Length: 598
Image (cartoon, rainbow, N blue to C red; front, side, top):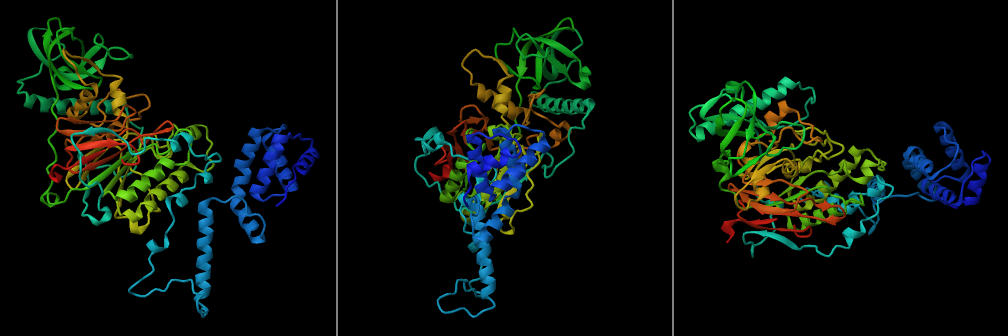
């Protein structure tokens, strides 16, 4: 199809619309792309400018014209152009593959009514012994399944990501992971996946943000009373005293750490909000000068011992540390499982300068190569903080982009047989942005994948053959690290302290008040965001540097993000039950080796 830039300029001048050379070149591209001639393109452009009240033609107006008018007519124009034998317009890999499949289906249908000539039969011969299954028909690669050009006009690959030189590099290790095979059995192994609740697991959406302040207060009060009761029994404390009662002798107080201002907590602004039973929720300032070692954050339930001579200030002399929950005791049927390989990756799955999902396609290749028994994939899958999302540059609805991403992962890993577990993120732009977050809903899940695909909530406690994984995509380490204060006579690891707080406070988000970007529904938080047991493996992705730590017997792993900025980051592989391991970069994603493996 031949299009003249001069002709386009003349058509626009009829309506007194000036068009410079750059805009004329862009219009020529649009004519070819959408199968329009000069007159038709000029007429539609003038109609669009008139309806929007724009009298001057600019690059921004041309971009809006393409997205709001031309792109909606692409399928119709493409079909007409292909039928006429002219230029077929721009087609991505997916649309071309779909056309090929349609043609094959039509040819198969015609052949069923005719006697095929010798040597010309293209349809596969099927018998009861060799039926034609859907799995044998679907042969598209992940690159064909995911077409970023269909939802982004500027889907260029990231040059920095493609130029990386540290692919497969081991960046940290935990214990000794020398030797041993790191390939799983895919779907061939006996895998039991169970979501543990406290008391039940979140399985669907709920009405959020209708909470009242008294309801929030009730949840916080219940948390203080429950943890206080456990600590009282563990430390054999006889009784608690009210924070308002003066006493010349040491007293023991139960409450929640708070800040006396709207600013950040410091050693001079600590207050103790007493429990309802003994203190009626009253507050008292706390003097920490007599405590040699402490680690505190807002929302922490503590028992403090000290002197309260006036009833107006507590001079703390002792801090009782929290106690973690017991580990999960698997039923007998879960004790006979063989060791399994679990791969974990956390989004975003695109680089900051591209929406092509190249890191995701590399991850799919790793899954197909190593065939892990279980793959745990944490969001965000379509990151709300991505530049093209923030600037509304995507031409398809967020939900459609996510579904295309999801379909790519599910169909692209079908040959591996690996079980897939999807955990949402508050940064998933298409999903409900409330904590705790309900699982993804995907009504288009193929029947053959139902048994191996699992959608869980954020946060979630997942048992894999009796080994419990604590899963959260929220950057709790970063949130709590910004609020925690501490004092220590020796060296102290801040991240280990924070992880210890999470386990001993028995909550996936013990910080109160939460970060400003956290929308927490506290009634559902109390039901669905508490730790039912101490996990064997705690996956807690963060923008902070990757690590593997043993905290209170729990293997805590920060695999980082799959990508950070324009650079690749980490994936994780574990062996149940993990004691040894190493954390490595994308092309060989944390490996943790079972001690029984030698």
